[in-house]
Length: 90
Image (tube, rainbow, N blue to C red; front, top):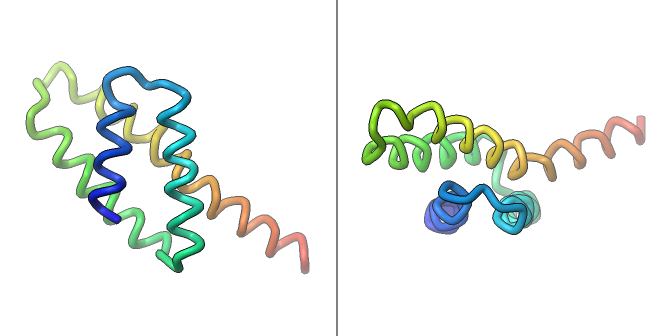
């Protein structure tokens, strides 16, 4: 999971293209379908984001963090939809 997340995020980071966000969403759906918990995803995101900040210059930190937030929101969108579906059943 970490490796797939890292690859997808590093593809998104330089250009922030929609195709890379689509890959983030697919990654989240796959994780949800495989039983990966939301907390596990948070850990993976934190690890990859920290790795991505290491080579960045201080002036680039906010750009990397902003990209990380957008990417992570797309990854967890599947979890949000699943939660809403469960709440709608009640």
